[in-house]
Length: 457
Image 1 (tube, rainbow, N blue to C red):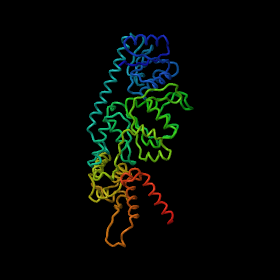
Image 2: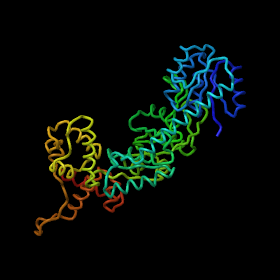
Image 3: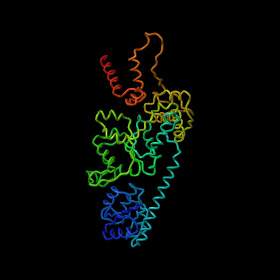
Image 4: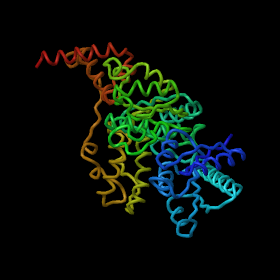
């Protein structure tokens, strides 16, 4: 594989000389005459190393070092200058340069420094990979659990991770969808690449577009410098689009085209940038309903929903609640220095009886509160939030033999549908699957229920 070098110097003759001499030594050399131009090239293309002069027109080579170190820490920078001094060398290293070379120098020496920088980069990447491999057998946090649902989920993650196809993760808020996405990345062939997470619901439309696709200098009022988008930044790795159902409708066609053509065009740019990424998306919403309501594109769903992973809610995981609670107690007690060892029997029964609409996130918050308040080595019922400590399980039961005490079938059906909807956190698509109904039938039953209530009112 040919190594790509970006040479930055405002002297055209020096640029031409370096390109000629380094090209003869098997390197692919590109040129830039200023820091701004270099940053634009770095945003649009992938380079293995940067060679820059200190004195440039406009922003200096040291400022370029700082930007590269901040935005692309894996790309080493070799600084060259005619003003070689110990002070300049120290400034260059502080700015993030990997190496420093004073003029005049031999081309062989520069080529040696470039290959040395690349060797250091490969070594750093190998250390990072070995650390990731060492973490492969560590528990996946909230993916802990011995229930059948969690064993099936971990098995599915292992199989899905080996593919490079797009993945859609569904599940209620707080059930660990990002954790699943990270596990898919960590166990897959792209684990040495970056994992870039974007919350589509957390950014306004204009900012989200710039964050995803990047922009060139002057693309809009505040675009004082070029910036690489997160899609391009995820090259070689995984882009995680959380809450994708909340992506603005105006951006969905642009994302669809990027995924189809495997390239992106930064805002204000005339050229497209090739991308090599895996897409993992997640949502707690019913995307089929969003399509029917015109909020989400069907063709985009087909593009991201090649493989689907459904994360079970905490209430469906049985005794995993206690296993997770004990793990949170261990970690939080260690962090806070409080000698809390576990749960009392009463507190454990309350955790098992509660429905956990906020899932694992709610459980973690509950345990953190309890550890902060408890005066004992065990968490007691009174240490739990009132909504949990005072909760009693509600089930749909048919009891008694007296016909006058039995409810009509319609009433039992209504109560059961309400119970299933509660257990799925209001996810109508999942409730319909549990009930054995298609979604339209479930919607009709819910509409009739609403109409009858309005008539009674």
